[in-house]
Length: 469
Ligand SMILES: Cc1ncc(COP(=O)(O)O)c(C=O)c1O
Image (cartoon, rainbow, N blue to C red):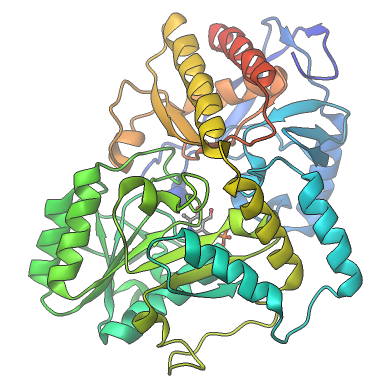
């Protein structure tokens, strides 16, 4: 047990779902939490609840990004005070082993000493230049050297920005408007990507959120992940009109879903044949799956790649890069406009450089893989030992599991999960001092700071939690 408060309490939270929709990221179910008299560790979250209550008057929904509000799992979010290495510490004095890692960036562990040292030194030299600096070259060269598809790179400030810019360059380069994305893949919150998939094979996009004009998504086509035939059918139905295909080369935004290698290879061949751009959204997988990102892991080279999270080492960052002839479209080299006041920010650059240096040292991805394999195998065993239908997997330091028999190959499979049970599991693990992503439809992240002892303790906690839910 990791929680600072270790006495056994008399209250167990049980999630009861109040909404039934499971058809999209935006519609994830909103459970509520009720109390039952079952023994469970006490978790004092008084101060967290007070702060969150106050935040609801100040910030929409009390948060600056929706999933943080715990709507999918019930209960109030935990308010963090500080993070260090593999751990998060909340405002009530509880300590958690953290498998969210700021949603991926904290791959070297939170507040890594080496990264922090570089950041502190940079602050004295200035936090923003708005002018060229050599650090941009240094990080750019590291990205180009490691990522097979990238010959030139443009830095920006978030994954959303990277993806919307990549979309623009796909269209500018091909002179075509339509794109294909996949149900359950998330590419940030730019209008053209906020599309829920329809039930048909060839489904024209409809906006997923009020405020997104139908025209903004009219050129977005949606297909089922791991289904190459659907993609081919979309190309056949729209000859010469599709600029490109964008996807997560390992899905993390419907929970963890691995692609079939043949699916990725088929997309590569189809895009080449159709004169369309293949874009891997590696905002999550970039430098997490492998030193050369998911494209190196799968041996499939896209034309364009988007990045974020890890390359900022915990600072706000995004990037897109690819073949020189495509990137030459971007202003001022070419006519496609894209800009940013804080782009190439020196703090983000130094944090990214040091993070990639650490990740470039021998054995780092093997370490992530070994720890993560043991963790996910332990969680799955705990589930099965206690009679739950579970399936899941991992690649390197990215993992996930679903409360369903599986296999899970796409979003529709993932949506068969028992999300009410996930809510109970999430709360039970919090009570055990383990911080997991507050949604069945999110991946988990390991860091280099996690220890074998953390994994042992988490697996033991998972056994107890699975027995309670
Ligand atoms: C695959 C993917 N693309 C894009 C984004 C958007 O990135 P950001 O939240 O930095 O805007 C995310 C965020 O989680 C992501 O996972």
